[in-house]
Amino acid sequence: LYSLLKCGDPLPSQIPVVYFGVEFPNQPLMSNFNNIAGTTSPHPYDVMLSTAKKVFPERNIVVLVGEDTTLGRMGAEAFQSFWKEFPEKESYELKIYNATNDPLTDILNDIQISYRAPKSIMIVPYWGLYMSSISKVSRAPTFTVSGTSLLNGVFCAVGPDMYKDARNAAKIACRILSGEPPSSIPLTQSEHQLTFDYKQLNFFNIKKDQLPRNSIIINEPYIDKYGVLIFL
Image (cartoon, rainbow, N blue to C red; front, side, top):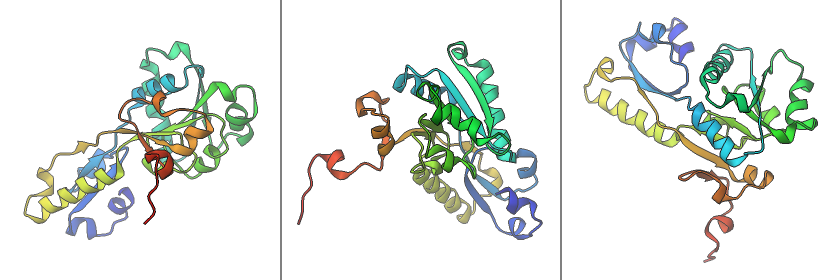
């Protein structure tokens, strides 16, 4: 979205732009355009950590992994701001890494190699270039707010339903095509949901009844989900 708005192309000024899935809205930039509308993604770190505590009560090391990009820095800063006010932070040890600048061996030591790995959870506030490679080899369950990270070694994504987000964006587009000015449509934040990868549940030996209510499980075989298969 920001590349489109900042590149100087006249297109965003000529036709309406509808967006969704924006984690860090650039309000000063977006205020220069009166023909954009959409939804942003939440950062429910409180829900993320309460879920981690419920599912993995014995793990008390939080490994925060960011990267040295604009969105990567913003994601890490957002989590650290939340952490300052987190009422249970004294019960945890927080380790902060930058996947761009810190030695990979240091990160792997906490999430894969050392005795600390079974005591750790990994938090990825922004899903960037390096995160799939790190998450797939981690012995610490990975939590993130990015739904696009699923099936890439992530245990739990605490973020919007991408299908619902796209559907809501389509509804906004329909309102605009019906004559409603984009500037009159307020910016809204999408609702989050807890989405778990079935293969990760098996890897960490977590049963379905250990998950919070209304959790979504993806990547689950039909026979395990429904208990029966019918062949025609």
